[in-house]
View 1: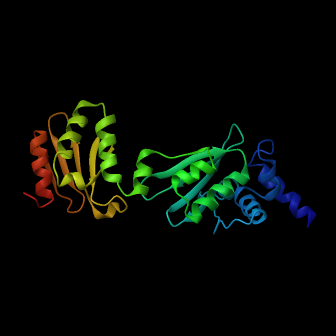
View 2: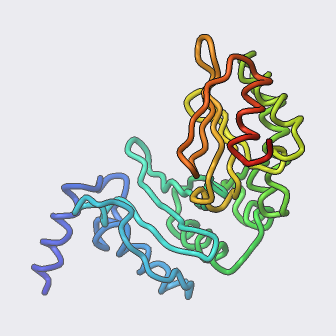
View 3: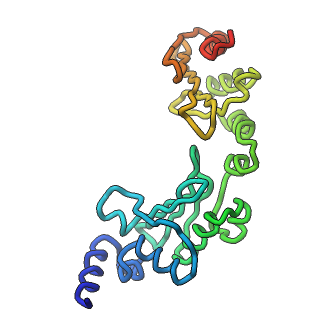
Length: 236
């Protein structure tokens, strides 16, 4: 049995730095270490699994689940750090890092128990969340996202595109985001399968697409792009 333990340590140490993570090497990697520390602390982490498809992923990554999405843990390579990402359906709820494995277990346990974002940051100051995550928790993510895009987008063509579509009462109810220079308007923030209207400026036109029907239109101005989007939405 002692030999088995040494063999396991040797295997883990080939993947995990024994200098930075001696506890992980001793316990068999990140997943096993989280389960061990959680048991000692009396914290329920639920199922702990690897966040990687790589066979060695169990040693350096971990994934746990909550009713608000998964929590992912990765190891820092240059320094002892546990990188924590509290994921949501379309964007992270919160993220942070710590060198203390007990803190990691504390964050996961607190989030799984239902704490708010502000409570999470109060208890674990190394965790941070953004304006959109706070708005999502408070029930107003759509208008917060519009305000963020209107305030922060500096590219003139996209700035004008955002302004014009925000001015349309129907599209103002959609969740907007930018992807590869395209304005995407999602019908449901939590379910992209509900469909989107996408408006992509080109050098001379605007390409307007409905992901629901697969239809696509070309428009030579922003105003005509808005008309085309309304048509694809059945509002013309």
